[in-house]
Image (cartoon, rainbow, N blue to C red; front, side, top):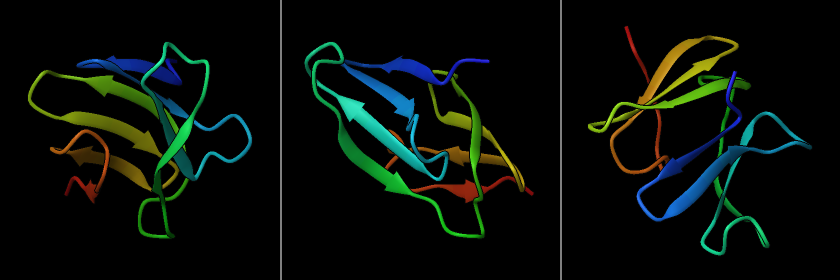
Length: 77
């Protein structure tokens, strides 16, 4: 269950302190910046996958996707 993936030139991870948050790093994980904070419609992130066209996340409320590098997320219905 990956909590960190490589997306283009960035590392993207589920925050180890709060599973509602995604963080990114541009320097191989030396420093992390916030990318997205999920509300109740997305829930807690459990798993991340990069399909090449979109990011897929398994969350506490179901399957979600992002087409902009994890900046915004929608539930897959």
